[in-house]
Image (tube, rainbow, N blue to C red):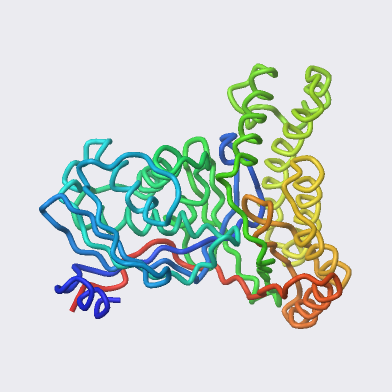
Length: 385
């Protein structure tokens, strides 16, 4: 990256940083309801070589997307949707609007990614977070990881125009190797929970259906608005504030069947997060396998109540569980993307083959299947040499 940066811009970078994509174990569409989530970072990352400028010019280049260097005026950025360059530009914009005006001097960035795009693995959040952590270190802004994640989220919400919650950015910024991140999306407190599946003979597979999803098409925003309307009608600040045991009473107060479904999913998924936390921290090895049915239950809720699944995701879950997996669910924003499958390590290859066979039988393009290893969050890889 440093060598390519130098060839591109004529001088070496000041450093090289990385930020990972993520999969979410459990807790979907709960983050913007100020609820609870449990993501883990993937080894797949967006890497950025970066150098500061002082002339107010922001130059951006991707090693993965054909095209010339994008050159923008760092002092005159305006919210824009469309195109990968909006994500790093939005981070600089968000930092400057918050008073971190040193970033208005501009920067040169060269980026490369191994996070599959459109797969529900948070490639956009990784792009935002790697930009934020590089600018923070280069300008000595002194931001902690929750603050970095907030600025990255603001870039996506207010600059790019996608009303995402905070989970993806926090996962990319704050995960640690060998752990799953139990995140309270209200105050961003975190608990790092050990998640050493290998030690217990287990594997978490990620199945990328290769069905491209796009969260800017209105379906995600409609569900967020529906959740907010449900909370308003129930008289709570957010659905996180509705106890699970109060669901039957809440249904009696909602006339809209769509809102009932949204409320049931969010409140139940927060409850599922609590159940998974209890199982992972029980100290009983068998309880790691017991999270499998909770994952499958979560998929049914996403499919039937939130209605954000698709035939390919449903096929992953049905084929994997029929082949003996402990559990499976879609992960991410839905309408395509990826699923996670919890299986015995000894069975992983056979279950992956069963999923491939099911896709072939349905005449779907072959999915991409790989193991998820809980990895490190955003970090500096090395100074430039």
